[in-house]
Image 1: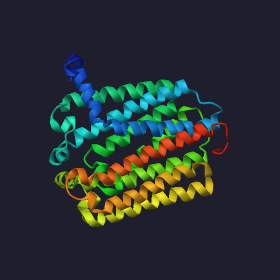
Image 2: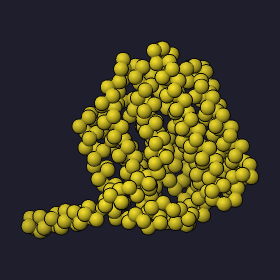
Image 3: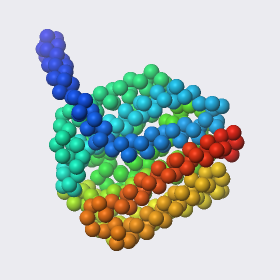
Image 4: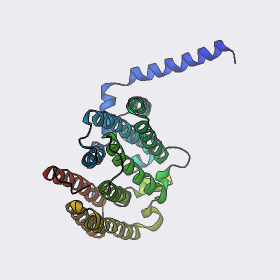
Length: 321
């Protein structure tokens, strides 16, 4: 191919991207944020913030301007990951009757893809300006997010893939918050809290599959309810969530007593989740079947807010060191 032809080809690609960008409106951006599920984005921001606050005990005062810049990168990356997931899940979301913007047709796939590209580019560029380590974390987060939703064998399609990807997305978020402060070694508080809450994501987060069986089956996903049936899946999810809750409480009492209040919250949440998953209240229509997942989300928020409150009340202590 001649040099002139190459230049013309590049020009056509750039012109096409420009036309797509021109068609992306503020409405599309707002819809893409709704597609990214603000409640989920909020908990990722809390995970990052808690990681940074835990590190602040080891960094003699966090460099918060840098922390906010890293948080902005992380929000952009997770925004892109969840819009990407919406694009990939369009078949099963429509089968499940989802009203999300992409599945409902309010947000065109082409516009959503353009927004994903801009968000990924922005997060990577800003991260590269901050530090190579932050850039690496953003690359890993975007890579896992892509592998979860896209490709010939997306990780979301089977239980081990889902669990591994979700736990890694959580772990990297806590680590990014810790890194943003400039803290050095990873302390036991981050290992116990970040590890337990990442496992909670993998075990409790699987309860969303209870309401999405029809779409998952159509899409060929091998989730627990699809493979084992509803009853067996609920039993396994209840046991797994309870193991995380009681394990977190035991680990905090043994190694980081200051985290005990958070451990109690997660333990209580795991008990409620197990009861709700087994009770008739979570059987029936899709709204009822999502009740265990809502318990999972509420527990996450309560746990992170409890940690932040306890750290504010004990800010001058060295209990988490």
